[in-house]
Image (cartoon, rainbow, N blue to C red; front, side):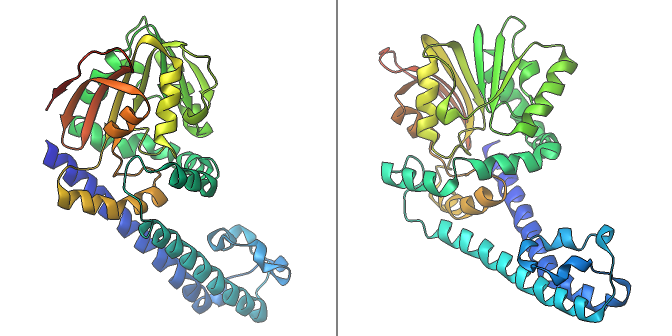
Length: 332
């Protein structure tokens, strides 16, 4: 099962790379196609103005903006389209190159590197926009993982939650049906569109759930507010996972549980290195990093792992606030 999960992850990554290559080809080639077919294309009059406003050339090629067939305007538009395409391509390349050349160990990282990433990332704004974009397709994207055992993992993790439950990164609400009937669930997410889908799902299920727009790195709840805190594949995309886990520790009750389902960096040295190289691409395209050392992050946040079930790159973790002194259990 472990090898199958790794193959699925690598297959998804290869597909993403192919899609990116296709988009780049379209960005470079499409203006040429437009110029060849310019006799049937009409460009909006306002292209006589400031072209720098139109950074999204795909939007500007929309047929609904057609008003002029002047060859000079078409030529001017094509020149600007080429410049915009190359600017976008170079910006994309610089983003990935900077990520690959970032010389810091995957996982916890030091305080200075985390602060630098926080300043550059604009407080998860890019991640939130990314999940807003994929919200309509998110359930379809996750369906293959569910068929490969993901749903069973989520059921084991979420099914054990009770009392006042906080789900961090509730997304489209895929886990809502897995909670016990008596559980009182509050869900947060940084994506408004994902929350909209979660609300519709909760209504279909007839389940009373409180959903809020919030960031796990700064939870809007009092200390020791929840009996259980859950998360499913969340701390792979949080900008500062240790800070997020510290907030989780703060809001869970002293005798409460933190129940997590996460994927981690492979233990195999070769696969681990491959994941290190692919992680900047998955971060830039989809949001998550695939080389996080989540077990180490949990300990760094002051949580104590009580039980962990390991299955390849997957971890089903039960943790509590540190200081209980109880021993942890591990199941492979």
